[in-house]
Length: 487
Image 1: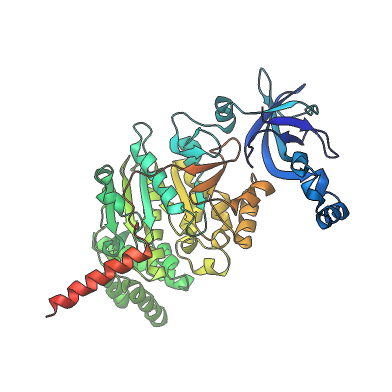
Image 2: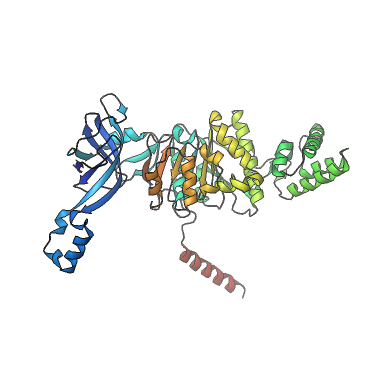
């Protein structure tokens, strides 16, 4: 028994109660207590100490002044109190809301792990991503609940979000049944180690984004305008006419062919001059060609991971263009059922689907928000990963019905999470800022009730595993070898 319920001005009530602690109790721990309502399940929201001797300021000062504290058994009057929020009550038939409080003096116990698993919605066949804090219980989450209505992983830098994402990738690649395709937008090359891994490498395709090419004839006038938002309606209309005519002449063509066709068209000179300027600007990105690389069949394969490595591209607009084009292509293929159900994981998602003033110039924002709203109907899922939730589109974030939230301390980000996640309570929000590395809160569709867990140890190779001292020594030795070769 953990302790006994006490009477206070606030309770016990149907909403909360407190108990004197006999054994070690931790914040966010789940407990049970009997009542006429059934077996009440609650969660510890706070733990504090009290001592009658030290309630009076005058008495404390007097005792300390006269050194009477040595004669007074103050430690014997110290006790620990835990405050508990009532979540519901188990009856023989179901789990119901609490309508009758526990009695003072009633014993409080730790919850049985099997009962806790049922309450939280743990799936024995789900993704084994870690262990529930304070319990020897694996946090296995149902695949459909986790991804069909989209997932967001939110955390400040250094909290372990990329590590946690790698654990989720391992679980997806390990599945024997219900396998889905995975494409990962890797902004900094953090996941390229998967390709070198002895266990997972055979299931991974690594694409260097600087080598990607998109077939020019498959790009619509609207997509060109998405890349160059300042194009006028007249320019888009005339570009559509040129594209239509060019497709009748050639089965495949390059951007140079399109620019030449515009120059030879009967479009007004002012419109023609502007169009050529826009198209030349797009052509300089060097991402359009007469054919696709890789081809459509290589982009998504069931049960496999495609990593799109953007680390060698510095220009954000070019990155957004590539993400926009690849996302549109995959979504269109999925709607036609030409590829398997898939999840698109986007690292640094606030760079590709921003909020505020930045959203007007973000080329990829439109398709990401479309996927967030409509993707679940076609089994095209999103996983948005961000260290700055406040900079991430509220439209996209609000559609992520499951959120895994790791340590965040920025008040603006915390407020943004509060606004986008209705299921989160003030107590849970306060706990987020004190989480350790690798610890997280899961809320939403994948969990019947929010709970804290710690990601399990990953099995795959870490790409950026060296610390700054190791990298400094590596660079020094590399420089020394290079200098020796010069002689």
